[in-house]
Structures are given as structure tokens and as C-alpha cells.
Length: 363
Image (tube, rainbow, N blue to C red; front, side, top):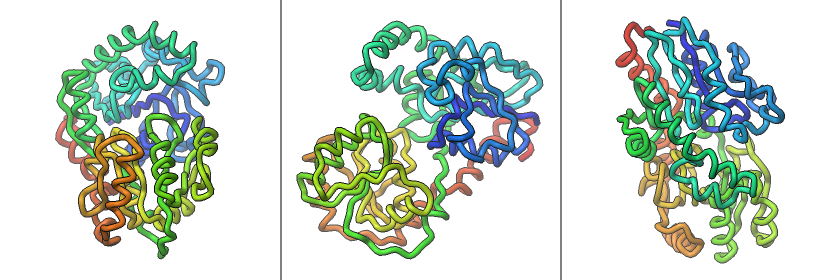
């Protein structure tokens, strides 16, 4: 079965790209179609596959910041020819599912979320955009929404990365979906022998919707140590309002990230995420999670592996930190819970789904 893997843009290696990397392992002979590919930023996962870019890739700065060309993407997709492919498997939170499907092919869309900046989080993105960004969002929101809804009609089967996203798919596209949670490298984060170092941890991009400001403010008010592992446009402002108990270490990866997780008292997860791989990684390292009680965290954190705070305020998070002081969490229980989100579980569920839905599939 000739397979095409579709992804909105390959300019970083984050959660969506890690799902695509698993698809590449499942389909080692598949070709990849995307708007722009930056091998320096994404590393090796896709290097052994043929990667086809749209015309977007040749526009100034597209391989570093593809999103600014969003209004041009539907037209660029129409110029791609996928004749001869039997299976289209898209990894989607952008406009790539609108690609033309060859006659007789099956299109399965693994949806990380309908585009947040067009739908549920439009106001949040609009508020933080610059003057040119605000103008573009006003001009193109409705045409892109119409395109997004229409492109969903060409998908044969939707997979959602969480029940939270499945509700969005139903509400926005009017489509049912099967929930298959994305993979985490549980085996890697389980390894090692570490001791707790008395700090709390925030991991992620320092951007508005992830709410690193809540973690910083709550720890400042509670006189608690916090390590912030991540970079982004909010870093300078957050650092200016912090004190000596709050450290900014930049983006962490590999052994450094594993150690940060394992030595933390708890991970602070104050934003609303579609799924959120970070809490799974922390639990795999034996560290509990203190999360806002909304979004994908409700599917990855339990009362035995963490606790929730109800409101997106520093005061609400401070209350959860005080409750955390009275609780005990067993590291082995945390690690066992994380196994439900392992790469092996993901591959098994994907294979079962594909064998059930794609005529003639052999995996």
C-alpha cells in the first residue's frame, strides 16, 4: 500500500512532529508532504524519507516561521499531485488535510486540534498579535474557517489526540472521531536514579496560552523554588518580575530534561492544552503534576498522580501548592500510570485502527 504522510509544516520538533515520527517508523517507505521542511530544527526522524514541500517553502523565512503564510496555504496544497497513493495519513493542526485526495484512496486524519488560532483560541491569539497580525486575522478568519470546514469533508476517518479535541472536532466539523492518545517516550524518562531537590518545575514554550506567568507568580507569592525550562517571547518579562528563587534554564532536552523532571517535587502545568505530553513525561520520571483542571490534563493526570486547581489564577495555584504539601505520591504508581501513553501503546492502537478501517491494509 503506497502511503503519503501529511504534516502542516516541519519547522520544529514538538508534539505533532513526534507523532509524525512514529508514523514514519510505522511506514518506513512512505513519502512526506508538508508546506516547509527545516531539517536543522527537526533532526533525524524524517531524514530517511522523501519530503515534498509546497511552494510556501520557497517564500522568505518560511522554513523558520511558516505560519505567517497561512492564507496562501490552501492554494499551495492544490498544486500537489498525490496520484498513485492508496493511503493518506495526515498529522494535522493546520490546513494540510485539504490536500486533493486521489480516486480510491483513504484519508485518515490524526487531528491534534482544529486550528486554535481560527476557532477556540482566536481571541487569545488576536489579543497578543501585532498590528499587521490583527489586520490579517480580521481579513482571513472567515475565508479560512470556510476552507477548514470544507476540507474536513474530504477526510474519511478522524482520530483525535484526546477526548477534549474530539469534542472540538464534533462541534466544529460535525464529525465523529476515535481517540488515540499521542506517544510519550516513557521508557526513556523512567530510567535513572535521582533524588528530589526541593524545586517545582515548569516545562514548555514561554508563550501566553501556556500560562508560565501563573507558575512564576504562584511560586513568588509562596516563596517556593521554581525552575522554568523553556524559551519564548515572555521570558524577559517573566524574568524581570521574578526573584532569586526562580531560575530560567532555557529549553531542556534528553538527559537534562529527564533529570529536571525526576528531581522536581512536582511539575506545574497551568495552561489549557489539547493533550499535553509534558505531564506524561513528568509522571514517567516519577514526578507528580499540579495542573489546571481543564483540557487534556484531565485525561493524563489522576488523583493518584497529581492534583488540579480550578481557576487560571495564581491564587488558585497557590492553594493547590498548599494542598500538595499534605499529600504523598508513590513514584512507582506514577511510572506505571505513564505506561498507558507509551510509544508501544500508541503503535498498537494505531495498527488496530488502520487494520479495521483501511481495506487491504497490511502492517
